[in-house]
Image 1: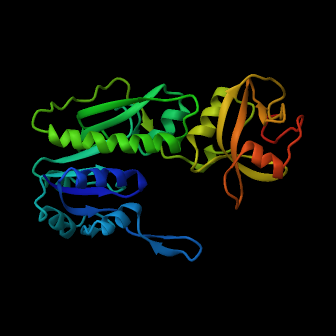
Image 2: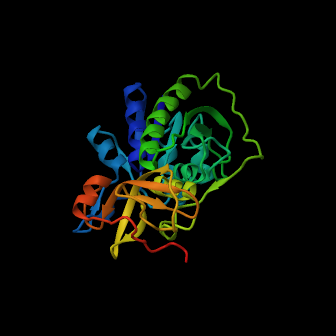
Image 3: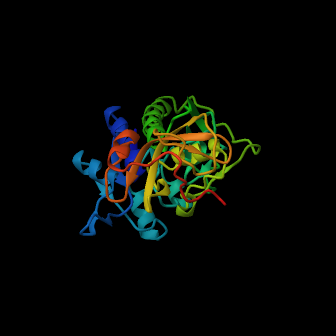
Length: 306
């Protein structure tokens, strides 16, 4: 098929690769404009733009698709289908209508659960036991279109957003190739009204650990916000990101370090911190962190709620 690909972050790159490898003609790649990054704050192309350029594909990064000129340029591509995954711009109705077979979105949840901006984070933070990918026909509403194809993956007890991100990205790449192969025979399934939830964008204010909460919630917060923005607490007066954890046994005052393995008492139960990152430093496993930054059992960390 003649495809317009629309995506921006690293999550979208395996999908672009899969479309090219499957032999589809990628007429053009749309992504967000380059953004200032790094110490020099120089404009840096998005991961999708970098990959598309390496593949020799035409790239466009309009600030908006609302102007009539931008819509006319899109329609002139005469695409069979647009494949959209984490693009970052709203598609106006003329854009949705332009491809002959419409626009297909790869969404990282089992719709109608977790419509919106942060479905991977929210699934982990809510304690879901499974999630997945949906291939959805796009319409004007926020992730409201009928679903053509879906695939599930279990959520493990130590899954982080980083790990789930990579798994779902690969799953989405496989599923969109299957969807395009079977497009003529797939029956769009309207989303049920029951079970709709919204995955609100992550607010950095959600990242500070409150040790007075139950261990299950603290553990899910740590894993769901890893690696970005990163749940954090203060250790020795220093702000430290917590990137991985597991539930364990133990009890004590909320915020109390219970042993030499960084087991932390919560409001109920305990979590063991397994991967941490000091400001300006690389991520470290807990034993490496403790060698350079000892924390004695019995230490009470701030954020215990009392």
